[in-house]
Length: 257
Length: 325
Image 1 (cartoon, rainbow over the protein chains, first blue to last red):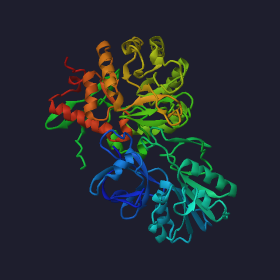
Image 2 (image 1 turned 45 degrees about the horizontal axis):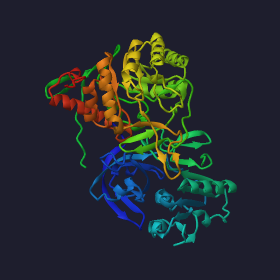
Image 3 (image 1 turned 45 degrees about the vertical axis):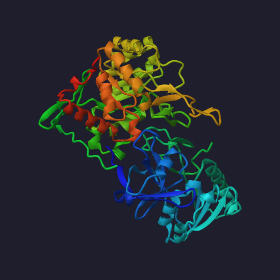
Image 4 (image 1 turned 90 degrees about the horizontal axis):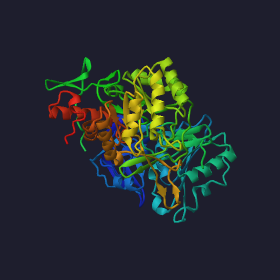
């Protein structure tokens, strides 16, 4: 009954670092229509456990459609067991996307926490060779959450890394990497994705400096189609669904509790 | 996991006739004065944004659509978290977030009308008068082929649901029946001692059909924080976890009342839907399954057809209430 429900074969499912996996599907029919910030809603089992599908930001849409994930719960652990050639039932692409940096932007910041890194390779694919200085600030729990990020570097992205335990990069939260910086609000655009606490700290940073910023938000989702209204988050304009109104919001709009 | 080839279901001039293998199947059912081309619909609150995401040619194959419940005034819904997955099910406390009857008629109804199949408009009033006002507005604007009275939402912090009180059920149904020009369906709650008594009250008040069941009141606790997981504290449980209880309630009510039952509660597949029909439901509504497999309502319809063919049944009426005891 769905225009956007497909079964795609897995092309690759590999571990990038101790904690993160990359899964690629051969999905030519949707490849060209996906925009950075959009997501896929994946059914990880034909059975009833886990019951919901799982949403994943698109990590890259080049030859294959790729996601980045961390096997942490039942859904992602089942995903890690999938082999190339198996088919995945996928809804997508879903949701809105990051908007292009406004005119006059020279520097693009991508602020990522943990698996919130996922949408930014795709964004940098889109923004490279356009004259922007691309900077990734990435915070992970430990060195197990860090991989060489060669693909980012190939896109000309300068990467700054922090870990909670200091096992690699600067010790502390990702905000340690930029809290003393004072970027020019008329030439800087910030994109961010990560846990709520991190987004809240980015929100206060960009507010204090008058920076423009878009945040990709995450919530538990059932339908991901704007039908169940289960993934609503509070915004200054009332509740909005992450799946249909988002996942990308102007960070000034979101109310982080 | 190879692609499953869908069974072809093609209307042949008559909405209710399905051809194939030389035989004709009659899938048509009747709710009050309304004839539906087949018995499959969706449960309220589980189907949205059809124009953007769905192949409308496929949606048109369903017997009817039931949009999310509409209240007189807009409601912003409950604070998050609003949903949680549970063993074979889903806990929700959305809180009837909706744009209100005027907003619904203006913003949502036109696209739903364009799909071109009957709409059962699910409505909820906080008072009898609100139910009446909503019905009057739809009667004036058109667009409702039937009303489904949501007497049983567990997520609005009421002390008692209308559908937990036979007198209140009788009163609300009678008031709406007095002014509605289309069939009236009472959606009842499973959280009662005697479902038969409540169903009978709806019948006495003139209801044209009964929808069974709404969600079971339920909750989950985060033991780390010792707080309820849902922002509303309690919620309603749906999905396959409640299905056997739903089937039982339909069977129980079907023996007592003569009006049609729209059966729902955890239907994921055609096999599940067949249980409801055999237990005595005239129609089946696919709800939570839409969130997992948006094609579930169509697969249910295709599977019912397949079952009838295999069992050499020509009319859906041969299936409804055919439980052998």
